[in-house]
Length: 369
Image (tube, rainbow, N blue to C red; front, side):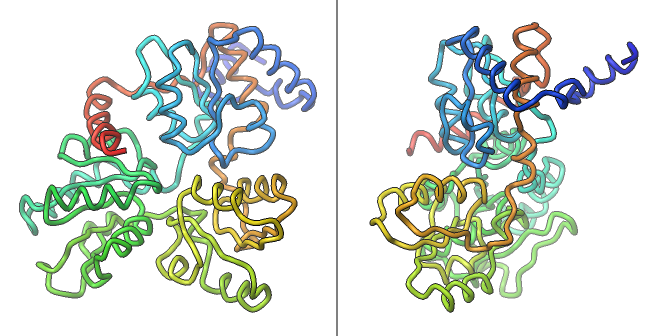
């Protein structure tokens, strides 16, 4: 490798080629050595959707906000290597202290849903909606959003939500203003609003590509404005998938994540957050039968952990979350060795102003947890 190639590699955050030539055994052995070497100075949180090869090294596993909160409570860790996606690492950085550093093993590990709402689109939408509705809207954002969007929401009196507490947070939002703007996942927003009694006829969609409100009724009837975004994994569970299960496995219960479409959630037996799904399977009776509508790595892990139950994916053609799967053993090892060598690649740092406003949105939610 030339000196120019070396510096281009370091600047771009590209995995050095040498890591691709290591065996799995070599990488696993070295990762364990570094974990033992750094001890309590190192903390590795792993999201539920991570590959088994990565999750085996996690010091804690959970959903995005849960992991960020665990990071915040771990005062001994100086280095937090977040095995998840970019917005999760940002949230961890916002909630941890300045002396702690957060790393993302692969900077390509993003979230397509979070990327569907950028701050420039959101500022334009907010200005347009203010002209239509005046000061009657409070913004809410799913934690699956960028730090900039969380900061926008915090600055404008809103809060973050998770799939676990979305119902209570939407109810809270309606005590603040007459309407809500829900970012960036239209399906979680629609399912949640419907569950608390808002008719579908009172929900509009904001199209950020064309900068327009999509609504067929009288505009004063709008109660919920849904950002036109979605999860590329959960949107692939369909009504046809449900019909197939009902026909071929009539005694099987269907449980899905609320990031699925309204039609899919309505036809399922149950829906809930990732933790809700995990708990439902763990507490289910032996020999019970389940079709699960969520990310494939998690479904496969549930199948492995519960051999006493019959579990399938609601969509057998589903692949794992592609961006989450960017994190693998070579990238994890590279991140850890960069800490040991004090080169520290792929550090995630949210600027102070953004972090200050974003934490307002997070705190408004956590106060009601």
